[in-house]
Every structure is written in structure tokens, then in C-alpha cells.
Image (tube, rainbow, N blue to C red):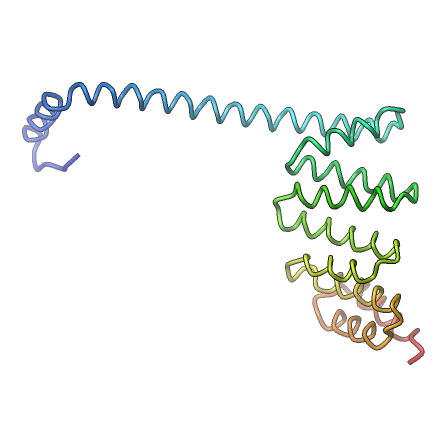
Length: 206
């Protein structure tokens, strides 16, 4: 509505507006109220869904830790159904369970599923890092190197360099491994990680 210079002009303008647009305004108010109610319902519905998903995730993880017979299949169903952060976390938990049992193909499947469900870049980087490690254990170095390309962020530079060195070494590429570790040492590596990469370079017979 236009801004007027005094109160009388405002009152006259409001009267004209209602006189000329009374029916349309009434309809608009009804629609506006309906939209507001709908928005509040949708927001409440989303909050309830998030709360339910959080509780279901906690129950799934607790069941996995307890070692109940049906816990694994229940967690798998939850992870497959929840295409969100909770589903991604559940897939991570399941993947660790499978790695501990040396069921690497199942672990890879869960990590791929978690990656598809995740929307946060940091979470995706965590999943990609674990996926690359599993692929290395499965003797799939090229797939592991490809997976590392999906890890973004400066905070991951040194960790990725360390794992890239391991992968290249598994391929017999000692020079590539050394270059990866040298790059890692020069990046944002922690003192402990830097020392570990230096030790790996010292152990190379080239």
C-alpha cells in the first residue's frame, strides 16, 4: 500500500480500497489464512518427521550395539528408507559392522547408499574417505582413487594425500606414493600425521 503524508489520507485510502476491493480482499484474506495454516502444518509435519527419524536412528544404532538377532536387518531397512542425514549415518554404522565382519562388499554397498542419502559436504567427505579405504581393502585401487576425488575441503588435504599414497603404493607406484606423501607433509597435516607420512617415505626403497 502507498505511504501517505497524513492520517486522514491514509483513512480515506483504506476506505476506498475496501470499497473497491472488498470481495477480492475477503477472498485474499481467506487464501492467506489458508496458506498460513498450511505452512504451519507443513512445518510441524516436517519437525515431527525429523524427530521420528532421529528416534528411529537412535533405536537402530542401539539395537546394533546390543547384538540382537534382527537388529542388522532392521537397521538396513531404516537406512534404505531414510533418504536423509539419518539414513546416511545409519549406513555408516552398518558399513562399520560389515567391515568388522570382513564383509567388504556389503560395507561398500552401505557406503554408496549413504553417499546418495547425504546432503552435507563434510558428511559426504567422511563417507567417501571410508569408501576409498574399503575399496583399497577390496583391491580396487583405481576405484579408490576415483572416490578420493569426491572429497572436498582444505581440511581433508593431508588425510587424502596419506590415503592416496597408500593406494598408489598398492599399485606398485612408489614414486607416486612418495609424491602424495610429500604433498601431504607440506599441507595442513597435523604433526602426528606429518611424522607418519615421513616414516612411510623413509621406508620406500627408492
